[in-house]
Image (cartoon, rainbow, N blue to C red):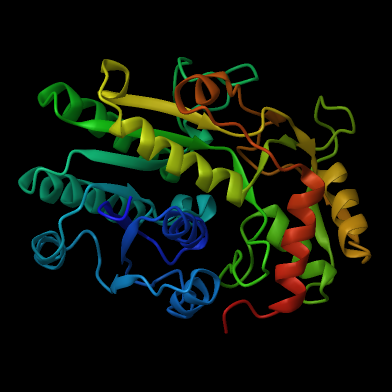
Length: 343
């Protein structure tokens, strides 16, 4: 692997940084491109603490052709893992043009520069939001796709972009990994999720309540058709998730027809956990109470969402290893040791 150099866009973000650690530990050379609008440069130091290697870093916007091109001229990349992008559903509804501009332009520019430098392998950070509100669970990769917000719409549009590129040039190899709900932190508690401002996601919010940063949690709806009335989601440990990216890189490097063109693959555990089950698991992991109040449903939320993971097992020889208890333990260790994140 030492001769394989991977470009990781958005590599200082939550998922990207954990992926960089896994890549370095597997012997890859890594270059990170990130504009730091939603992340901290301190992450580079944490990666070095864990791995003993400080990856090469370019503070650039991937959408900027004049900044990205020199990077491909400086380094010979074997493949790209593309995390860079905006990811808050609520913000995307409030600022749709900002999301379309940022997420679509960065991917278009990246593909143009990759094509110009004959780099043909890309692992894309997609999302289970592409399954929309009407498919029955568990979600399989061949279901019809749709989106209920601009964030999800950008993921769908990028997947279409990748499919069209694959049709135009038989050399392209794309793995679009549809994540369910990434949670947890590195087992060393050196790295974890560091949301800016009020967390958009449930687990970091619960962690901030447990550590005393926030008074209580709002549970959006307890009248869904689920075992306890609260929403059910498929939570996946961040280290399992990034292992899926390494396996996807290996898959794209295989010399067979299966790895050519565009392939969408779910990354989840295949099991659902309700909001109340998650709160209970976190209280057990942390030994702290997580007070909550039930409020009305959120617009656009669905009752149940979890993955069918058979394709990941078949194509990538991958399946999630860590359970909800481990996810909560690692999140709590990160939160209590870094109450203010990377600041």
